[in-house]
Length: 225
Ligand SMILES: [Zn+2]
Image (cartoon, rainbow, N blue to C red; front, side, top):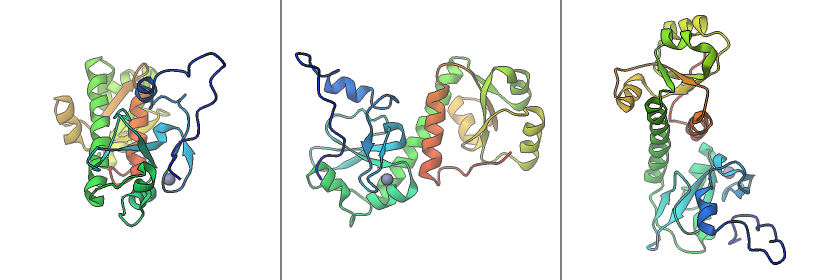
């Protein structure tokens, strides 16, 4: 089972296959990409629902958060169960996927996955902030609520604040975000627990990044409103 992805569809006669290898890698997190298979549960999924790992020439294994590193990749579901199994040295899935020996420290690799997924969310928040697409604080978010794609809520938001958000932003989708301190530090502002995300470019990418963090579990718990 060396192959980890379904075969490409046959190219049209006389035509080269769509895109270069590099181009396909660059588009690896787009939704129209072919399905990839998890090395643990063998489920075929779109790349956004999987974590890509790359092997360096010396056999080291690293999490490829943007799915852009060169060479063959091994894919694992964004689930705690598949991540834990794959990073158990007894599993052997990575060695089979790469058809070569791999060297890794399971717990350290899991920490790396969680840290990079978390950093991805913060980087996307920072980008939206610079574009003027984030509304910080409940009152300002409530004033713009018709333009909101969703509201991000810090995991350490108080019960009281959650209740106030429910009152002032009825029907608006909510998603979890890291702690107020972490968001404030990432955005260069005071700690903030309610972040309105305006509709537009960048929303889908941020939602995907948040979903990946939640799926891998242990990053943040999901606050309920
Ligand atoms: Zn899986």
